[in-house]
Amino acid sequence: MAVTKAALKELLILAGVERAVVDALPSDAPMLRHGIDSLDFPSFIVVLEEHFGLTIPEAEAWELRTLDDFAAYLDARAPKA
Amino acid sequence: MDCDLDTLLVFLEQTGCPAETAAALARDRPLTAQGIPSATGPALAAALTEALGMPDAPDALVQEGSLDDWLEFVARHINDATLKPAALARIVKSTEAIPHGQAFALDRMQPQDAPGVTRLFHAIYDAHYPVLDYYVPEKLIALNRQQAVLTLVSRLETGEIVGHGAYYRSSPPNPAVYEQGQVLVNPDYRQTSMAFRLLRELDTVSYAMTWAEAFWGEAVCNHVVTQKSGDRQGYTPCGIELSLMPDGAYAKEGAAGRVSCMMAFRVHRDKPLPLYLPEDYRPVLEGILSGFSLGRDVHFSSGDQTGCRETVLDSRIFDLAQVERVQVAAVGRDFPTHADALEERANRLGLAVVQVYLNASCPGTPWAAQTLRRRGYVFGALAPLWFPDGDALMLQRLAAEPDFEAVKLYADRAKAIMAHIRQEWGARGR
Image 1: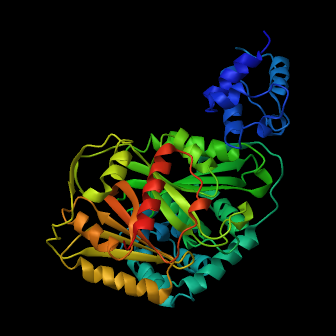
Image 2: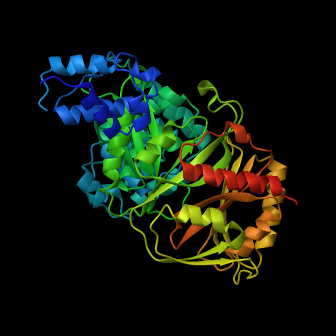
């Protein structure tokens, strides 16, 4: 099952990011340049790990810059949820 | 740094004495008379010399000393001026390159992690961390056993320590109140989620600390990331500590001049307490109290009731920061005399900040607050459970006008506190 951008946006909100920031976030733009800060980003990684039941290695996590990157990465990792 | 019995016992364990044997030793009997091998004395003396810079122990102590004898010897000779170079030399001697890009795991500090923690403090602060305890592994182990500190580490598979976070007893006189902080990450691991994961794990640990009444933190105000983290962990803003951190402390983050901090608390185990507060501060204090669920018998008054006993006061000066923190456990009629002495000392020493924490369970607290305000102090914080028997009302005296514009705040409650302080600052002397 493909991971949708809408689902990722809901997980960003679960990670504590304000809805207005999430709503304005383009899926193909670097998240850290669109209101996601150094606290939001690791929080999002942890939420993804818990939601999909996987571990995202640090080196790989920091290569993922956009929501599209995350969707492709998670699709390739065969998420459980 | 002091070396108490628990720390001495850790040193004894380092010589090969099993922990359970060490814990069962009588303090006043020679160690050799309690089954401790005669080789232990020389080993203990050597360990104390290497770690703490102690002079050679006398033969009688080495051969027939009891724990009390060793403690007396250490107390007589321990000295930060000789301890610090010895401790740092030991750290440098044991320092090896940290492997890059390894997986890490979070855990409570184990005794074997303590040298790695001291190396991490040294890697980040060099010789400048103001508390020497963090350069002495045995002291750190003892503090954890005493529950004065709860240390979390981030450990590589190779055993090296690359991250640290802690709860620790700090300024509050109430030992059941812990500060959250000391989140350190090895520079080679900063481009990871380690700091976030440490804070998250600390949060989990806090709920298992069944003896703790409250947790608190001081978030710097040159950015809002730390404040935001505290907000997400359920910490409630309760004060602004203006100009707390010294000039240059955060220069690498682009901060010019002294940096203010936002104080926030999370109360886990409240207890009913009386709360005597100044009427003039009612709006800001009610705003703070609305963020907590505290069982308080609140009395606002204009400060016409003086203290009824002698003032009980303790203070500590933080030389590097030019800050004095004064703990007023009880407000007495003689409080103005103490306030005058604080003024004189602050001027003489050129202190940038004086913070006075008044025990707000004393009916004389509103009067003491007025006494301070007449000397130019302004509101600082309402800190729940700060004292074992009361909350603290903190007022602060600043040697220079703070850079209000540089104070960045995240939460609305913090902004409301700041608005009050700024208004009060502007109205001083009018």
